[in-house]
Image (cartoon, rainbow, N blue to C red; front, side, top):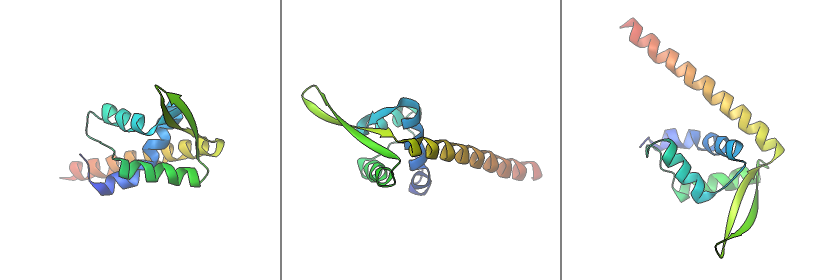
Length: 112
């Protein structure tokens, strides 16, 4: 598991990336996908995920659709057009950040 500080700074980007790749997902599906992709290193809690989804919705990046599944209503989250653009921007920004961090850490290791 990673620190809360790292998770807080990346959760929005993680959610946007998954919704961009999968078109629509419901909350539990997002938590399980992250858990599977990270081999349990990142385990999203409802207390972290749903406020992020609601914030993305209030910003106009996400909208919801309700569908019946096995007698229960599921709330699916989908990206709006501006959400698609935001996802692309955040994914690119994070990828560049990771490269920068690798440069910083590799430079320090090379100097030692």
